[in-house]
Length: 341
Image (tube, rainbow, N blue to C red; front, side, top):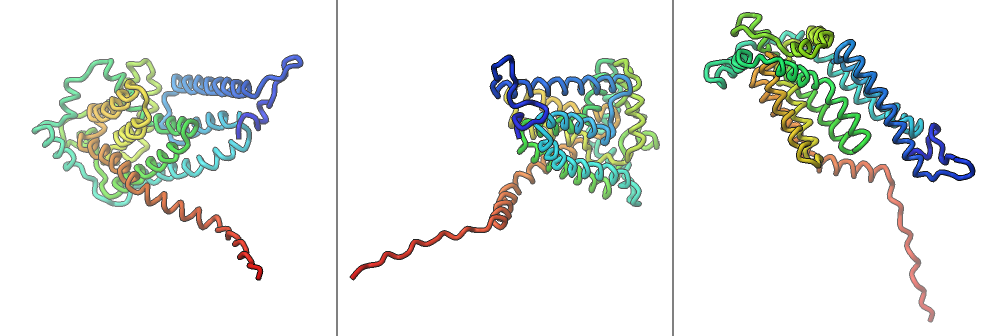
């Protein structure tokens, strides 16, 4: 489906008696899409300023699908149907993950509080890295940057899914599989190994005093509503889903997926910096131990490596399915030549 089939855009615009060529339709389609995305981005920005950055999956997927439907509608209703057919199952699986994550800490498994702290104390040669960072990093600019980096976790994945669906459908499909696999692996670990983050361990008196600082920077940015919204959403999630750090895992996953297609050096530097900066923010803010972030990165690398290893198997299975779906057409034999006596 192209802009030629769109009920929104005419196949040929008439100026006086001259018909504008079809290439002008593509230009108009790009302008219409640019206008629609600009309006949506402005509305999203105003919402964030007024109510804070949304962290709820339903809200974020709603924004994403609204933009994609507007984008696809320029090409006609068939493109919208295809969009919904591809996105609705993905959105449903992510929502199921969110719902089941909330029940992971209600299955009676013991919560691990001392072990992650002991590993971090060993890594820090007797001191907890979180405690050291909170004692020495207290600048306002860092608090603001940390709040933005931490909160980006909730926006980057749906935003990247939108961009890839528009720009590279094959990479979109690969990224969807990686996101779902990584989410499932994290959920399984949360069920089998619930663990307390540093701020909760400190609250229980297991380790030295540690503050939860992930929302503090929004006050520095002059957006206290955003911080309040983040704090409110944090109270509603599984507080012992600390191992592995999926904040780190998804930041590393974004880096691994986009690095091969990043064309410019500043893009590659930015991707690597994001993957490194996220765990630093998490450890500083008391959200995760260092070991949580290392395991999160390992999960992302493992998921990507497993997907690459099984790719030939999946390709062969897909070829077999296609071969079964398309019955072989017998090739007619030419009659044998007759020899006259």
